[in-house]
Length: 522
Image (cartoon, rainbow, N blue to C red; front, side):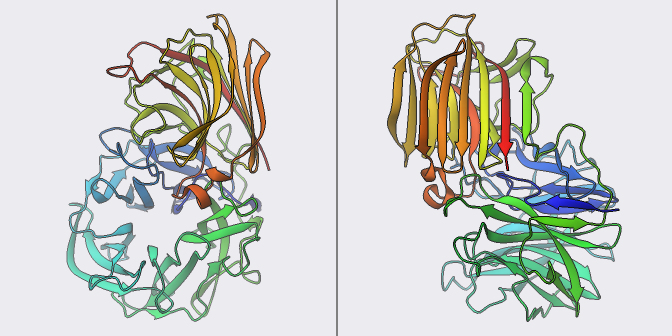
């Protein structure tokens, strides 16, 4: 009885994974930054097949990220289960700081956030000890003053889970496995083999990323360094290695007594990362009371043999290569869809006609909430098609499709009242790659926008009633990578609708989206 998991187990923009188990069920939560809804929750029974079951932050009352750059917002969540309740701790880096939310069901609803007074820094985690006590662990800048960028310390304090507050002694316990290490972060506490372990990332989340571990007989330390640190990294494998930036791990134990870690990594194309940091899996064994990741290999593998019975999801596998969304038959949107910052409720509505996207006065070139319905790009080679019913646009109304890294770096094919334009935004400056007259679009017309991506090249095509109106091939998209655009997100592909002349968002006018299809290629 075993199953083979293929890495990455959750492809595309699903970074900073945290995992917990409840019986034979496993749950992962990932960072979402300024996309809404926030903090996607994924479920599996075999660690190989994952489905997205919801988003923990799916109400405007839970999340305010308006005015934030896309790579701000929600950082590095941790999910834990204890005595029938699920807890997520996370950082909203621009609004409120560190918080905890809770739910009796991981699908939700999750509570509004309880912001934790005195919780400094970022990357919080919770640990429930055998005596019932709960501890908060996080990382913050050196209190005596940072001697260099990334001079941070990991600290522990007891946490009153009932009243959601820190209590008792505050203690800095660790600042990394190497001298002058940068960014000891993403810490988690585990208790195994009579020891308390702190497993943490260091080196920054780029090419020097790594995962290290230390241990102590007491939760308060002193902690001893693992002589074999880091326990996993790819920084020594060179810039051309296909998987890089490996680190930020969390660990789980199966009912069979086996250990696995989930961690992030990126699949680059010629040194560029466009689809973001993804979730990978590795096996853990123990020697001399220290964990060893992928014993005998020492790096991530394409496949992981798991001693569990296969349990495929019926129709919601997050890694599926073929996805079809027919909005005329939906009663609610799939949790895979994301919006730019708050959804605002009034901008989207489903009916038998399809999905109405109402015009917003805000455009996707601004760091504000805009009408944008997106999917994460999950494969370096993929085809995306959106079918829209006919519409008559006024002079200032714009609709279209975007390959979106952030407000300053993206490609967008936009339709206005009389023309179609393909634009590339680079550092906030638009350049027109192609444009053409489209004339009046009849209400009975069928409009299809097709986007093909082949690693660092993209092709756009516009069809009206099956007639090719615009076709642009071999567009260079290296600028839509983390290495050029910066930040922490991967590209999403989304439909947008805006009208800057509105005094407020439209309550009735917009476009009808009939369907969206996504086809990925490994």
